[in-house]
Each structure stands twice: as structure tokens, then as C-alpha cells.
Image 1 (cartoon, rainbow, N blue to C red):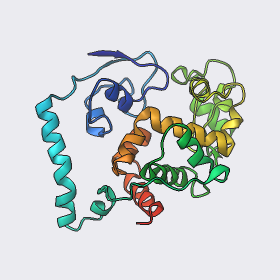
Image 2 (image 1 turned 90 degrees about the vertical axis):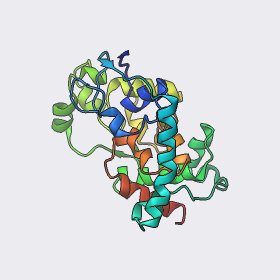
Image 3 (image 1 turned 30 degrees about the vertical axis):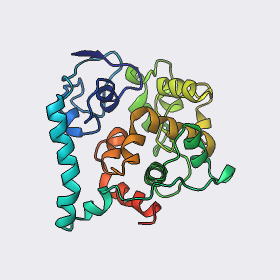
Image 4 (image 1 turned 180 degrees about the horizontal axis):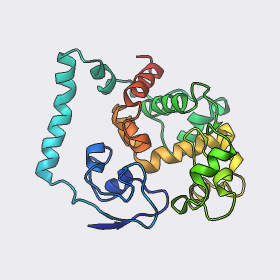
Amino acid sequence: MKYSVTPGDSLSNILKSQGNTNFADPKEWAKIKTRSNDPNLIYAGEELDIPDPITPQQQQVSQLNQEMTPIIQQAQSSPLAQIATPSAPTAPLPQTGNSDPLSAAFRAEGIDNPNILAYAKATMEHETAGTNQPISEYGGNDYFTKMYEGRQDLGNTQPGDGVKYHGRGYIQLTGRENYRVMGQRIGIDLENNPDLALQPEVASKIMAAFFKDRGVDDLAGQGNFYGARGPVNGTDKAEQIAAMAQKYLGG
């Protein structure tokens, strides 16, 4: 079926909206031909041919494979078995009040699962190079101009947008359109005040909204820390971040 990409779309959330239960699997993304030939780079307005969702019979086979894989891996003493097996605690984390903006932001989105919060903290640690503070994208104005100036797919239509809307926060929000859409999503005018994404409370709200809207919470909530990386950045550092999430759970 044909699908017209809208700002903020990713292949994972497009597949999810079409009922594909394997929406976070990079193998599913590879079935879709994109203009850039990169599954992590799609353009607003681009027409995509989306494969039909898997049949119930195929879904049963996939579910059986998912159920058997941890058992096989554990029998083989694979390091991934300890990471991917959903054996983490299921009780909510204790309330921490205003001292933990990340927890507060996720609870505001109705998310109170310790698996998800642990994965959010692992993602934050990785994306901020261990500082656990919102950061600006590495590089200077010349780099931002080269990478983002005039990028229609990011909504950078005005002179200087490349620099103004470079990556910020815990998940490196980038591009005028993404600042606008995310700002509307969380009720903060990020388009006119992009540096607000560097405030911990705001960066936390952005991450919580991203996790919920892109299905990261569903995967992390099941303990599938490896698969949860898909909607964020494919399989890049997936094993490393999964191990970090397990660390936050005390595993």
C-alpha cells in the first residue's frame, strides 16, 4: 500500500500504524525502498510502498520464535540471553518527586514501568556521553550549516535554521519541523525557543513523548531492551544500551 511520509515519521511508527507487529525489526524496514536508501532517513512527502501486515499464521510463527529464542539463548549461555530475557522486576519504581525530572515526565505520560524507565536512563546515558545532562549536538555552526541548512525534510526553510535547530536534549531533537511538532506535543514553544530543549525538565518531557509515540515504551516494557533500540536508532549500540538498562534494574 502507498503511504505519504509526514514530519516526524519513522519507518517503525509507520509500520506500527499499519498493524505490523514487527515494526521495530530492521529486517522489516529493509523491505521498504526509501529515497535515500537509508531506513533511518525518510523525507516528509515521500511516497513509500508499505508491505501488507503479516498474516495471523505468520504472527503465530513469529510469536513462537520470540518465545523460544530466549530459552535457546539461555541454554547456549549467550550474553544476550541475560539482556533480552524479560525477567526484570515489574513493580513500579518508588516516587521520587521533583528530584527526578525523567521519572516525573514518564509518569505524566502514564508510564510507570521500571523496565521502561531503566531503558530511558540507559538511552540518556548513551546519548549524552555519560553526562546524564541534556547536551547540544557535537560540532559548531559550520558543521550544523553543512548538515542541516536548507533541509526540507527537517522543515529548515529559513536562513540560519541549520544552526538554530541543531540537535539538543537527551534524544538530539533536530530540525525546525521537529521542534515545532514536539513543542505542540508537550505544550512548550520549542520552535521559537529551541534552547529550552537543554533544560532537564523539558528534555525529559521530549524523551517521554518520543518513547510513547514511537513505541519504544511497548518494547522496553516487555524487557526487550535490544529491540527497543530500533525506533530510536536502528541497531546502533543496541547491545551496549541493553546492558546499561539491565544495570539500572540492578541486574
